[in-house]
Length: 132
Image 1: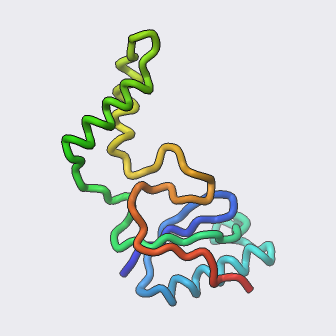
Image 2 (image 1 turned 135 degrees about the vertical axis):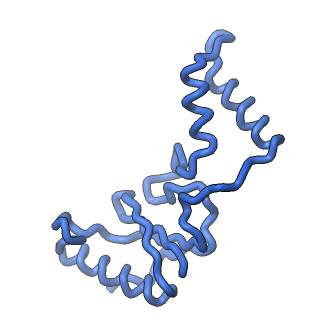
């Protein structure tokens, strides 16, 4: 079973798991079709949104249990201190807050609203195949 991050035109994202790429594509096609017809996207009745991108992962992209090498950690923290330094002073509250983000599975600043919200590297990316 694989996990798929389904990213919509507005940038919202959801993760679903499917047995195969074919099963995922069928679900994405159905959702995309509902969006193009202006139909509901789910049981809450909110409008369906057009799908623009799907990223595939072998594990849920929020399951980041790997550590970080000491060398990478030193570089990340040094860059963080440089970023936060103002007149030679760093706010400890801000440093603590930003340091927690380094280990987060989520991307703090995305390339654009239609890119993944996760740091995990996708195994495969789909950008077409669900249009009518």
